[in-house]
Structures are given as C-alpha cells and as structure tokens.
Image 1 (cartoon, rainbow, N blue to C red):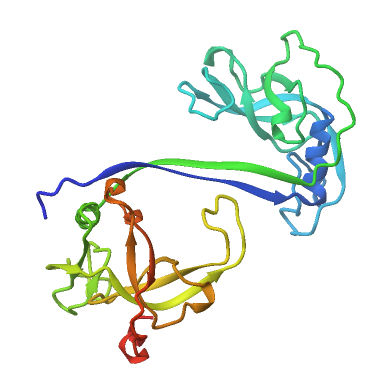
Image 2: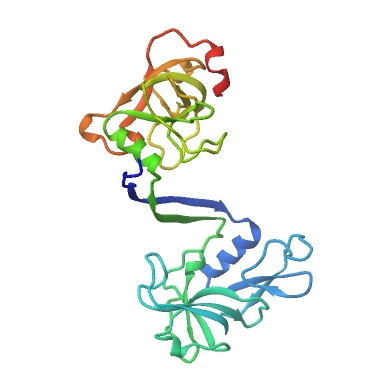
Length: 319
C-alpha cells in the first residue's frame, strides 16, 4: 500500500451556536444595542469589561453593572496583514486589547488603522458604532483613533432586551486521509467494503486503521467484506435539529458487517423505527452508481434483509 497516494479533500465544519445569555451578558448586549458599554464590578473592586458573570477570585456571581466610556487606550495589538474571510475587514487592520475609560481590564476588538506605523501602546481610541444595532458585539463596528472626526450615527430606537444570541461557527480544513483510509475510500468508490486484519489478534477492522488498537502493530492483509451484517446497538432519533436531513423518528445504529470485528455507525431505514432491534439482519442500500465517490455516503442506508435475527451470542463480544 506504500505506493498509494493519500486522498486529500477540503472539509468545512459549520453550525449555528445558539445560547441564552443570562442577566449579565444579556445586559451587556442590550446596552450595546443602545450604544452603551457596561462592565461588572468584581470582589476586588475592579471593573471587568466585557462583564464577567462570575468573580474570577471568589467564583461568586457578579451582579453590579458599571457603565464605562466607549473610548480608551490601546494596551496591546497585533497587525493582520492578510485578513481571512469572516474577519471584520477585508483589508489590513489590527486586533487590539483596549482598556476603556472606567474599566480595569482590556477588551479585544478590531482597530481600523491604515498601517502598523499608526499603532502604539497608549494610543487613544474610541468605538465606531454600527449604523443599525443588532444586540451583539457587532454593534461596535470597530475602534478607531480618537483624533479622527467622529461619524455620527442616527439615534437608536428602543431595542428589546437581548436574551439569546446565535453565533455561526465555521471551520475549514484540508483533510489528508491515511494510506489505510485511502484504500478504504477508493474501494467504496468501486462499491466494495474493505477492512484489514491485525496479524496478531486476527481482528478485522473497518474502516482500516494505521495500527491495531489492541496490539499496536500495523494492520496486515486486506479483507473484502460483504455489505450485510447485523445491528448490534441502535438509537431512535426523536429530536429534530438544525440541518437534519431525515424527519424523526429514524434510527442510527451500529452495524457489524459479516466477517468484521468492529461495527460502524449508519442509518437504518426501510422499516418502522420501532421494528429495529438488536440482532436485526440488514444490508446496504447503495445510491445509484453515477453518484458514487470515495465516501461512505455511497451507502444511503441499511435496510432489513428479512433473514432471521442473529443470535445474541454471535455479536455480544462486539457491542
């Protein structure tokens, strides 16, 4: 397998993270929507901005909100010469730690300056407010040097209290498959399921891996496996969630292919969710050949074969 060229593919992981804010952060976001900034006073008398929900010394809840100015000074900074997608600017800018007047701790935000030559510790800056408030940290569009003419924004209307916030989370990576994973994926592209046998314990792993987790040795011979097996354990999904492609209820199950020693997770469809059980014999339902690629998604789901259930003794060591 050493001559196999590893597969490489871009992968983007993304989801929207929605959380309730609680009284402290909710007050902070609501204040931002009204172009004000508040912090919390800690047990040592310091004003913490952004506000902390719990005291960093005593861990007690902090409840005293303290208004601070929307201007302050740069404590530290870093220059962003090549901004990434999603950052505050598509041109070079700085990220800076800014201690607002009336606060004792600095907050991180973008600083709009043309070059690093304009930056220094102690530089006086002020918030540039967004034209339309949203009740989030984005209500501060950025900070800018205080000696610039201020761009006046229209007065804000009464904004409802902010109690929830949704943050998009995205991570783009380039995944390089291992040699063993590459062989497995290339076999899937041909409609085959390939595992590997450990030369010591003789267990067959699918997907193959670089070392046997029991014996720590590189796997040996490739093993062609059938596309049918048995349900070892399963879960009926009843809870809807964002991005769900199948309407609940449906079943996600561990399927132990005949001849394998490790089950893998897949969908069980083609029957009522309540009919799925441990020991149920299933087979792969492949997508149309023209849709195949180097992915397990070539198997759309597993479905019952109609065969008698497998005796528990045949799979109890694989749960």
